[in-house]
Length: 368
Image (cartoon, rainbow, N blue to C red; front, side):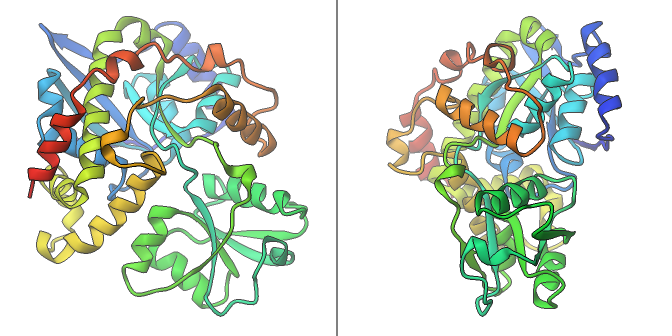
């Protein structure tokens, strides 16, 4: 089941949600015996070959959710801030939202807490046309950069990228909304923008059409910054610890399955979310969609090693949190350093990692 939810992003709305949540306004989780229902907020308005496939669809189709006696319904939201708002208001129980949005909500008094990592490798990249005269980050001075929207994570990244290159993001670059997909490509090819600031999976979707990009390097300053992170309210964490542990375990098993066999994962995606097919046959879409999904998976699993060696699902080190907080503050999302004991709780991860990885890998290798 999928529903759609659009929420505003104002500071006033976040403040109101903080009051609502503090007063006990709502986890919508319900349990019938040992079977629980959760509402999952996806931090994007449209379903795509990314986390909703690799964690939810695979978890559903491969039986990982049912093994944990869970029923999970999906709602779409218009970005990470809206997804965090959905959780805070009780419209959803859990989300995988940008860590910066979670930290920003905490600073505004919204009692949300990160409980497990998801995207561990920095997903944002700066790209130009292959024949562009932009060769280094410093060459962006005076240029127009296409971002998904001015309120998106890509705009935050573009400003941080320019500042890291020694430019003044407020003076030396101009950000223009370019969207994603064909809209973003057209903006670049028509010369309305000189570069794009998108996430890896979005570029792969465009490259599947035959388009080519040349990527500028990210500096070491972007290493270790965390992106999508599972978050819930403090109330839900207190009341639904076992349910949330079971959900995380199912999601990480599904992610491991997806890493081993992304094509089978994509076919699970079509089964659970048939709208991904956009009226086409699975065999006509699966090759390109698998490339797109795999690009997302690479951001969520260790950058080195084979699936057999993957472990400590959801872990975020103190250094990674420190880097994430610094980036979030530098980018203007928060005004002071966050207390990690207030924003992060890893107490569910031991249970979430309590599964037989070899059995998941064997099942994925055998899947078609």
